[in-house]
Structure formats: structure tokens, C-alpha cells
Length: 196
Image (tube, helix red, strand yellow):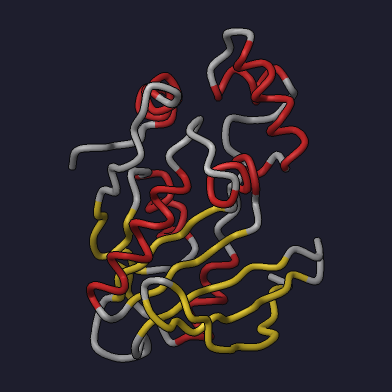
């Protein structure tokens, strides 16, 4: 893994003052961050979320997905707990990139679901890599996570990379008429669990 820590600073947010930690991958020039609140290096499992970048959902408030509401809910829950970590990974569109994501959206406009659209573009359903999370956890002294996710594959991937996920906490939020099929596809084809 070619990930290296770059710098940390304070980041005031509407949920409180977090610390933001920047990391850079020298192999692909991707930059990833972790937002932490409280002392995450001691005191047992850390409430956390591993969130892959979704420019359309996180910054442009798209209702085609549930990413933006999940990001905000995770930060709110970390703030309520007073301790936690949000890993923000730069792997847009389940790893296919922003422009290919727009191409996938166009295919979805024509009737494809999110998995079919990625496959029609020549990609696997999910190309995300979570190996950088281990380097980030080690740097921050995080040994165990209580992970906010609906995706059991994410739990398995983190575990395979040596991260001790002691609990999966569902994060069901952001459902609307524009993303109903998207969420159904995540459950039916990608194995996401929304209720337990």
C-alpha cells in the first residue's frame, strides 16, 4: 500500500469541530481523508463509517441515491456519540469515476438498473478498494470499529484487510421515489441489508 499521511487540521462543521486527516496514495494520486471526533485511539470500538465519494449525492444533493443523507446521518451520529471516525474515500461511482457514473446514469434513464449500467459500460458492479482503511486506522490508533453501513460486503472487505469490525449498524435513510429502484437493486443484487 502506497498510502501516506500528509497533514491534520481542525474542521468546524454544523455537527461540531472535527479533526480532518489527509492521506495520499502515490500510486494513483488519489487523496483520501478521515474525519475524527474525540479520542479514537483509546477506549474500545470506535463508531465509524467508510463512505465512498459521491459528488452527485454528497455535494449536489442528488436524489438518485442515498449517499448524501447517509454521510450527514453518520456525521450526526458520531457527533451525538462524541467520538468516532468517518473515512471519506475518493472512489466515485463504486470505483468507476464521475464521468462514467454520468454515463451509467444515462443508461439508467433508459431502463438499466445501477448494476446493469456499470456492466454495460464494461465494469464490475463494484470496483471499490478498502485496503487504504487499514493504513488510516493504524495511523489513528483505531483498533476496532462499530461500522455504520448497510453493506455486509464492506464489513467482509474491511475484515479481510485486518480491521476488526465488532458490529454493523444499519444506516437506513434518504429513501425517496427517485431512488426506490436503486435501493431495491442494492438489496437484491449487491446484498445490502436495510433492517438489521
